[in-house]
Image (cartoon, rainbow, N blue to C red; front, side, top):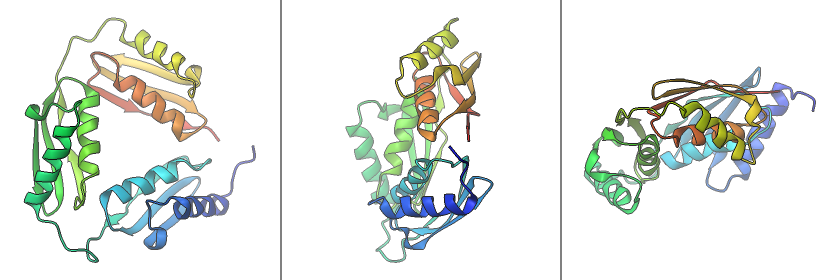
Length: 219
């Protein structure tokens, strides 16, 4: 497949943002330099900001994303911080994978800060996703730590085996290095979706406390 020019890639990203029903693309700017997409402008909600980034990742040829979209509540009544806290605590209570007794929530001017210690990496990510979906949230800082577990001696082999089970991932294209509970991913994959599959598989491995993703997208 021929490499897209920056102009072609810019048009494709703009078309994908227009196509995505959960994104109002009118106030989003798109610039492309050497396959790196810079998103700017404003959206009305934090979930919309996340959706815009996900839509951009779906476009073939995107090597990386610089995301500078801001959330602007000017067109809607501002939601009080205490109401955001209540909604977030309710949402976490409904999500069985989040240990609510171990996660602390602070909200200041619409910005959510999550803290605490959980047993598994995926629990940290689920708490972030829950905060990202709450109406009125302007941004999220995820300071939740993952409890140190003795990492299995074969943690790398378990991750590689998980890669091989994934239909949407070329396992041979991804490299895995481990140091205790820290996992680093490298290599080149064909699309952002494969990168996400690799990340999820690594995050789910027993004993993993952090995942560093240096996987690049092949052109």
